Amino acid sequence: MTLDPTTAERRALVTGATAGIGAAFTRRLAADGWHLVLVARDAARLTELATELRSTYGREVETIPADLSTDDGCATVEQRIADGSPVHLLVNNAGISLNKPFLRSTAEDEARLLRLNVHAVMRLTLAALRPMTERRNGAVINVSSVAGFGTAMPGSTYSASKAWVTNFSESVGQSARPFGVQVMALCPGYTRTEFHQRAGINMSKTPEWLWLRAEDVVDEALRDLRKGKMVSIPAWKYKVVVAGMRHAPRRLLQAVARDTRGRIGRDEH
Image (cartoon, rainbow, N blue to C red; front, top):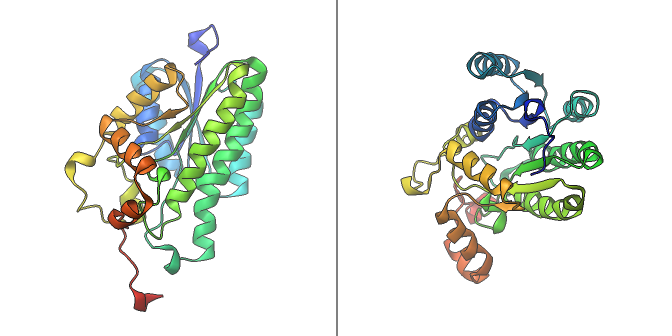
């Protein structure tokens, strides 16, 4: 990743910053000397986190309470990127899943998922890349998922949204690279965060060995960013999983796929 010569001026903007992978990014980046712009819906949690980061690491920390599933929320962050101090690293981490399969869902809920997981990622990436390519330095990390490599969650549009994020990041990354700017999709597996709890998804039957620590995910993501990778898949076990999802026969994947929220019976359509 190409950065401004003055390390002390590095600034990162992280969405979904108050929990899970987003919070792990903020603490790691602050420890590495980055100033921060934190974005999340909960203003109180943003203030609490910002106070912690300032007192612990002595960095500048801005907060932007915004719901990125709305046009107004995206516009607020776009304006900050355009008008404020330069952002050298954007981490698009905010995202949701739904605790119901598609056939029980509503158009409103599905649209909200797509606005946050897809539309907001597109808008903020575009907003960040314009000044980055003009300066010829900077990077974008779009948090995707191993779920995007196959239909491993029957009835879920979450995996489809993450497939878009990965493909989008690789495609845009190719066009940004000649300008000294990197775009990378981060594709973790199951990670210990509030993500599933907030969605009301029961993960109690998921084997312990499949879980990752958010801090380890962030460490590997930043290593892969420095290596110039366009797709980062943390942990060897998930590299094996993704290889299987990419190359195994579709019938085999469909036979072993499970919906963590429960399947729909024939009488429940």
